[in-house]
Amino acid sequence: MDDATLAALRTAASALFDIGFAAMAGALATPALLRDASSAWATRCSWRCRTLFAAGGTVALAASLAWMWVEAISMAESPPLAALMDIGGIVAGTGFGRAWAVATVGLAASLALTSACRLRAMPLRTLALVLVVVAVAHASAGHAGANGIGWLVPATTVHLLATGLWAGSVFAAALVVLRGRPDAIDVVRHARGLSSTATAALAGVAATGVAIAWHGLDGSAAALAPASGSSWGFALDVKLALVAIAAALGAFNRFAVMPALPASWPRFAHVLRVEAGVLLAALVAAAVLANGEPPVV
Image 1 (cartoon, rainbow, N blue to C red):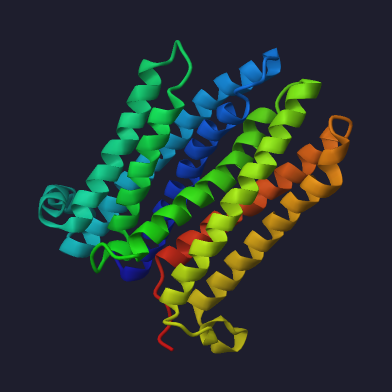
Image 2 (cartoon, one colour):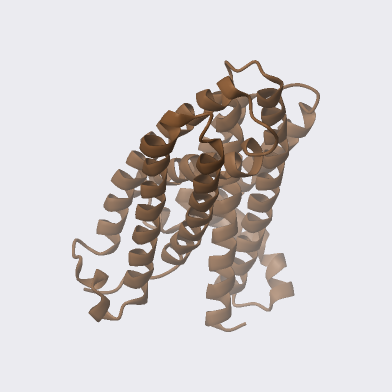
């Protein structure tokens, strides 16, 4: 399998992992935002989040397994089927493999725990702790952990968690909260909580994103210029533009639409769906960055 194909598969697996992880984070955040709500609508939203969590976890787990398969093909330089036999050695013999195993076991455990608690509310705090462990392990298995546990690993971990919380909360709102006729009081409560959560997460995304990008660019912004011809720099420009658009949409909802809720609910919902689509594209751009090589400047 040639390098270009491996790179494309690696990027696809990374994007699917990020999307699935975000869905899991959003599925935990939404019931927390509705914890003081008492309407039947809010109760249905919380129960639907269980399905979203399971779907996101399944996607993330499948993507993690696919990612290791691609890495095994690349590291062992073996045919696709033969590479499956090399995964055990990679896990046992490399820091990357052990970190990947922790993340993968964490994902599987979260799905098993959710299934075991199917007749009662999800254990939000326990599952949130598992997601933190998964984020740390995933960051350690990537470029951030290539040279040991330095500041880049916690920065990447916070970036993954903040991105997942922001995008995931919006995904959950678009897929779960917008279904059915909302309760007039609880929908305002959720909208305010969603806005505050997204704002805090955006601050974390921005702070850690700047640090990670600056490290990748070795302290120079020259590669961001369109004339540089750097595909990595172009992908970063696209990601930044998408994040800015999503932030602007969120700000529009918060300051122009949300004060008129619940009367403005249809407009709020429309903007939220558009924001979800933009964030989905941003996660794909982030996967391209994570699996690309920063230019030499």
